[in-house]
Length: 147
Image 1 (cartoon, one colour):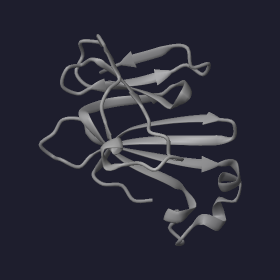
Image 2 (cartoon, helix red, strand yellow; image 1 turned 30 degrees about the vertical axis):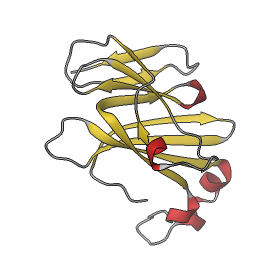
Image 3 (cartoon, one colour; image 1 turned 120 degrees about the vertical axis):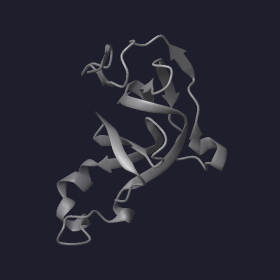
Image 4 (cartoon, helix red, strand yellow; image 1 turned 90 degrees about the horizontal axis):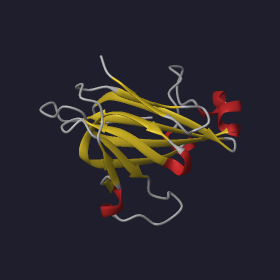
């Protein structure tokens, strides 16, 4: 699977035998934080038979074996976590606020504008630069932390 830029944050969630992996990347060296978000969807069948999905001896995964969605972010982020209903929690790289995004439905036909995510809500965050987020296993609590 190919990504643009430097990977800066990861988040995963397993729900009904479907694993969703989010990868936040920065492809702009002048920008602090991630400006791209990739969504990868893996089924249990894929994970069980992973050896059949390699394209080389380096264990590179074939692009057509995984459902992938590349999205842009209007606000650069530092850390992220996936909540219930594919809600994404992220920390703003510039304002240090907690941002909430709703991911587009991969089943629908998406326009270019649908792939540029804007926060649906914003809340005060911690006052430390950078950081990351974790969601509790029961998806009820959100933890933010920074160095």
